Each structure stands twice: as structure tokens, then as C-alpha cells.
Image (tube, rainbow, N blue to C red):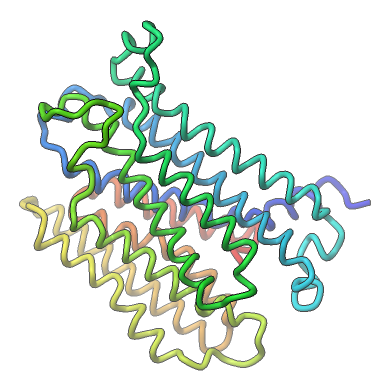
Length: 346
């Protein structure tokens, strides 16, 4: 019978808790980038706490979806792990397939419930109590985040069941998960920031300008970065070095450079914005080079470093617009590295 401490460590490893700061970082990036669409007249009466509380709920929901996907994937992969990764908690018998699988479905359900009810909470925090008190709380629900939340959960579940059967499709699905994570956060933000927007749009009707074309750049950048590190991760069980290191290096180093588009497309006037962007970009490239150096000898070490690097990539996209939000991403990067000492990231 495994000890309680051993089970707790096994649960932490199965849920890949070391990667939760990167999930929060992706959500933060999407949320704050979306906020830049709205002029000061839309933001003036909304205090920081009224923005942060719904953002924390969104982070909690997305973290639950991530945990659920990791746990479901481990439950489905039991035959593969028995042969190739016998040290994983389920093959060792520390956790049972039934408990892990059922826990994952509970987490999926709770995440979607939170995602559904956070809309009335946001309405309440932004002084729309009258609608709630009159029984018309459904008018506070926006369809964007619910639709993307369901789509994200669906892709995560499909990945858990089919990633071993079709490797190219698995890479696309994995990239889509992170892409949808950023888009979900962007779709969520417009509801929070749009309370004073003079343009005609009801709370239930999708606002016509909630997603600008340039906002696809960070979402696609995060998705591409995911595909590249997942490419390496998919070869971890194979002996020998990664064979396409030069191609990977070229493609990987182009991803942060896409953030330059934000410099040209957004009105940036403060010197601090340029300075914070330069710092974030340099840190991101230094960490990438540090990870690529590890790839020469260890694919798992590269993947772990690359996973933590999500936070630096998000900071690069955020820094020109919101230096303080980029600083939070840097803090999440430190937390991710600390958690990797507690439980493995892969």
C-alpha cells in the first residue's frame, strides 16, 4: 500500500503541476493583449480588483482542464507506459487507472461549470447587480468563452485518446490546445472590459470587434512553439539524439521574432515599453539557447526547459503593451522552474 506522501507526489507528477504556471501565463497574455483593444473610456471606471478576480477564475478553469488532460492521457497511455516508462505512477501501482480517469472527468466538468458561472460573477463585480437581482442573469452570459472552453476541452480529450495513434495529428492537436487557451482568454476579456463601451452590443450578443487580426500573432506563436517542443517530446522514448536539431533551432528562434509585429501595429510611445520588450526578448532568446544546448545530450531536459519558456514567450508578446503583466509572466517562469524540482514537467 503506497504511503500518503507517495500518492500525493504521484498525483502532482500525473497532473504535471510544474506546467500550471505556463497555463496561467498563456491566459494572462491573451487576457491583457485583448484589453489593449479598448480605449480608456471603456476602462476608466473598472478597478484592478474587478479585472483580476474574473481573470483568476479563468486561470483556475484552464488549469483544471490542463490537469484533467494530463491525467486522462496517463490513464489511456498505461499499455505504452508499462513498456517504455515503467517508473510512471500508474504502471508502478501507486495510482489506479480508474481513479485517475474518473478524477480527470470530474475536473473537466468542474472547469466548464466555473467557466459558465464566472460570467454572472463578472457582471456582479462590474456593477450589473440589477440584472442578477431581477432574475435575468442569463443576459450576462457571453457565448465566446463557453464555446472556446468546450472546444478546448474537446481537443484535449481527443489528444489524450489519439496522440499515440497518429503522431502528426497529435502535434497539431497539442498546438491547437495552447492556441485555443490564448484565444479563450482573449474572448473572455472583452466581457470584462466592455461595460462602458458606447458601441451597440448586448451582453449576450458577440461583440463585433472582440478579436483583432493582429491578436492572432501571439496565439499562433504560442501554438507554433507548442508544436516544436512537442515534436521533440514525441521522440523522448526513442534512443539517441534528436535528428533535426538544426531545423528545430531555426524554427524555434523565429517564434519570438513574430512579436516584432506588435511593435509596428500597436501605438507604443513610452520608453519603458521598448525597454521592457527588449529585456523580455533577450531573456526569451537566452533561455531558448540554454534549452537547445541541453538538447545535444538530453531530450527530456530540453522539453522541461522549453515548457518553462512559455512564460518568457508570453512576456515577449506582452512587454510592448503591458510591462507589468510581462513582469508577472517572468515571476510565473520562476515558479515553473521551482515546481519542476517538486514534480517532473513531462
